[in-house]
Image (cartoon, rainbow over all chains, first blue to last red; front, side, top):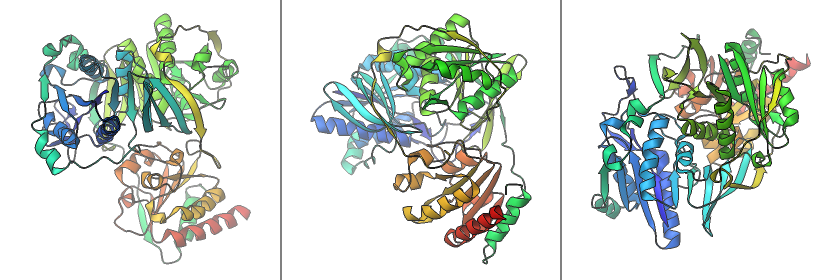
Length: 257
Length: 319
C-alpha cells in the first residue's frame, strides 16, 4: 500500500508575525510540525503491519523545509516530495489545498494522512479541502485506525464521544495526536535520512496554474495586527486557611454568588 | 449583509455555539440558517426563534450521520442557487470539516478561530487571535463568498421569538461524499450541564493528583451550579473524558466564572479559557503562569481550599 503523509515545517521557538509582510516569520530555525509526527507514525505502523508498501512525505513550503522533513525520513518514511516556489508564498487554505492536492494527485496514494493541526496557524482544516479537491472520502480526528479489506476504519473523537467511521480506499484521513506516541528516530535512521530520495518541485514542474497559488490564488487577507485586550487588575493571595472565605467575598463582590 | 449560518444539531437540539453565531449574523444584518439532517423539519421552526429570517432545510437520509462531505454538497448547492455571500460556522469537529470542504468546492476564502466579526466599508473584518493569543489579527476576504469559522463560545444565543420562512431544498450528492459510513456512535456519559452551556466552570488540572480528586471539583461545581472541565494532561492520563477538555485541542469556553484548580495555565489551556469573564485560580506553585492572567489567584493547596469553598458556597446558598 502506498501512503502519502502531508507534513509541514513550522518555526521553532517563539513565533512572530513580520509586521511588514503580515506573515508568519519563517526566517529562523524550523522544525517538523509536532502533530505531523503522529501521522508519520501511523503510516509507518501500517507499512510495518503489511510488511511492504511505501510511505512518501508530501509538503509545500520553503526550500529549508527539507531540514524538518528529514526528521520524518529519519523516523522511517521512504522518500519526500517538497513543492517549493516563491509563487506559493502567502498561500491561504484555498491556494495551499490546490497546490497540495496537485502534488498528491501526482503520487496517487491509497491513503493520504494528515496530523491533527498545524502548530503555527492553529489550522485544523486543510485535509477537508484537500479531500474535496481529490474527490475522495474523508475521516478526520481519528484516535485509532485500521486498514481492512480495502477500507480504512477508525474512531473519531468528537465533542460528544466517539464515532466509528469506515471509508473505502483511496481515502483522506486526519489523525488526532491521541492515536500514538511517535517514535524517536534511531541513529541509523538519522544517518540514512539524507540519502533517501528528496525531490523538490516548482509550481511549473508540478504543472499547476501559478495564478491559483500564493497570494494571487488566495481568497483571504491579513488586514492589520493588534494587541489583545488587557485583563483588568489582578490580585494574588497566599492561603493561610482563610482563602476560601476571601474567594467567597470576591465572588459576592462580582455578583457571581 | 446577509449571512447564512450552518446550524449544527445533536440529539434534536441546536448547539449553543451555532445559535450564538446566528445571533451575531442577525446583529450584522439578515441571518439565514441551513439545517441539514434527516428528520429535521421540526428543528427548522426553532431556528426562527433564535433570529433566523429564513431557513433552508435539507431533510435527507444521506444526512443522518454527522459526516461532513454530504453537508458540503448541500451547502454548496444552497450557496450557488441563492447567490449567498457569507457563510458562518461555529467551530466543531464536524463544522470545521464542512467549512474547509466548502471553501475548496467554491474556491472561497475561509478564516478560522475568529472571535468577532464587523462590517467595515461594506466588507467584513474578522478578529483572529493568533500565536497563542498574543496577537489579534484583523482578517478579511478578497472576494465572495466569504466563509468564517468562529471559536466555540464566541457569542451567546439570543432568543428573539421570531418566525422564519422555511424553504425545503432537495440536494443531489456526489458519490465520494457518500462513501464514508458511520458504523457506530458512542456517547460519553454526561453529568450536569456541558461545559459549552455552563455559566460557571470548575476546572481541574494535573495538580489534582489523580482521578479520585475530581470528586472535590464535582462537589464545588454542583454547589455553584456549574460544570467540570479539564486540561489536556488530565484527559491524556485518562482521569476524565475528552468532552470536558478545554484548550487548543479541546473546547474554547467563555463562562462568567472559571475556577482553575491545580492548573498551571500553559498556553495550550489558556487559549481555551482566557475569554472567561472572571478567572479564579488555585495552585500550589506561586510561579504558575495562570497567576499572570487570572483575576484572583490563591497560592495554596486545592485539596484544602476547594472543600472549604464548597462548604461556604453551600452555606451562602442555603442562607
